[in-house]
Image 1 (cartoon, one colour):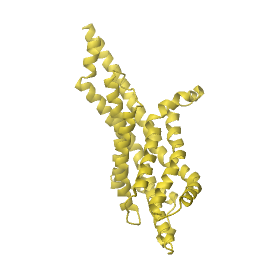
Image 2 (cartoon, helix red, strand yellow):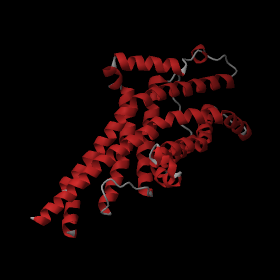
Image 3 (tube, helix red, strand yellow):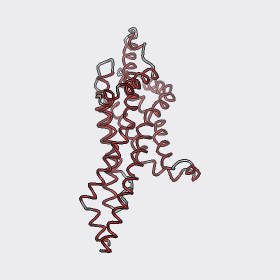
Image 4 (cartoon, rainbow, N blue to C red):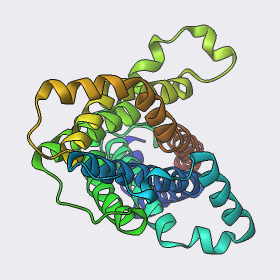
Length: 300
């Protein structure tokens, strides 16, 4: 029996089926959330580059450019993008910004799925098992950070109103730490947080699902100061007292935290939940088929 299990576990067909499930789950979750995240990030990119030019103008005592002071509101930007999605879905979904966003989050989900599959296979656990170890955190962070930098550079070129400058090392370190905290809160923390939630939550939703929304959102209250300080060092790259920088961070912290929660919840709340549930369902079916196959062989 144990020998049959071991052979089936490393059967190329079984491993291949698991990897196909990983790819399928990641692809379906990405297709669901990427269009909305693209709309949000397009607007955020315009806002950040607008702020950069505004700060640059103020530092040099120049009038704020008209194109900076007459920015499109988020709701107007959302309406315009949704209209594009509804009436010309093929051009929106296959446009370069959406494809870049699909690459970013599809690769992020797929990396997490693959690490879970590797871990469950090596440890001979059910295929639907997920892990929360350092390997998963490190691999997902590396993939996400690399592609996020590529996405940011491309979005700045496509939607920014100023030429992108090189990112100062201090800003790079702060923004990398910001994204690492978000990854940890999205892929490692929810399974640890879920058992701590009241059992009564299960009357309405799975505790793991609730934790998947709570953890990334709460993480933004912690990493928003890193985000603001990193952007401030980039936007106001002149010599400035630390006290003035921290004052700006403190003033912008509450509103920016809420904005960042809205920004991460589609990708790291909805997206991760959909990816995990699809993967768990299909992997459970695969486990049942594998068990039935082993029992049939034993009877024969």
